[in-house]
Image 1: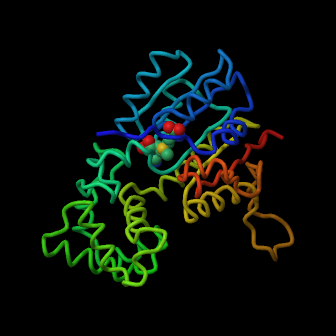
Image 2 (image 1 turned 90 degrees about the vertical axis):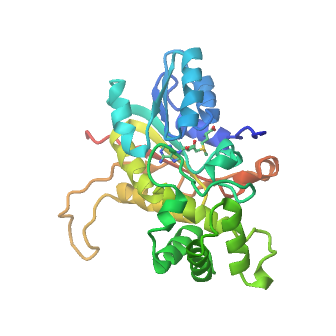
Image 3 (image 1 turned 135 degrees about the vertical axis):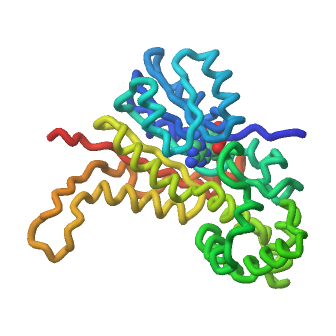
Length: 315
Ligand SMILES: C[S@@+](CC[C@H](N)C(=O)[O-])C[C@H]1O[C@@H](n2cnc3c(N)ncnc32)[C@H](O)[C@@H]1O
């Protein structure tokens, strides 16, 4: 099997925004194959340290190899719920920056056995951590048609979510939904004939939605932002790259709450909640890939980078 190397997206703006203290401690919470981590280590001094995290055991193997080569690097096997514990294991109470590059890596997509891709025949799995949780096929056995339609609509933005959900569950009941190719075939045939041959394959949005569901990715984003805000030191940066508008909106809203502070209704003459802003935006609008980057790496087309900075809460 040939696997494509993962090309790190928005590398320059991400590293520039994140690594502002050359001697600092940083977390790369989505280590993947370590593309961004290596760039961080290059940009930082000999005194700096980077902790890589990933919930994928295959990424951890790569991380352990890097740990042997570079004494400034540490790796931990966890999802975003374990960020604070992983930092605590190293006795880190605060860090200079935390970065996230959400979604799946190219090696995850390319390995048919992981079940992420409709381009290859594989099991209906889609778990980033194959040691935890339920694979897609098992989850489908316990979902109702309306729940499934909501998932496909909300996480995939799929117009034909209702038809696709019905077809998936019919085929599951008939015992002929076993592989990623079967699922691709269901999505194709549940899409109206006139809409089957556009720029995007009819299975793209459903596969994305089901992956987000299997890995509880929206809830993971909430945990990522909350933990990061706690761990950042004053002036420390949070940089998050996401790949679809639902994720980006969630990230924007979570950070905006911290930027805004006060939660009192507008009509109140003065603040009674006492909630103070803890973050400020470094760029108000998300950074997008340049035309040149999109040409070199089409995956970067949908990438959006948001950067915020922790405020000094002591004054
Ligand atoms: C897009 S890849 C990151 C690629 C990496 N930045 C690079 O340059 O090689 C995303 C990685 O984050 C991991 N990941 C995604 N969501 C995660 C989560 N909630 N907790 C831990 N790891 C996660 C995936 O397993 C995957 O390896």
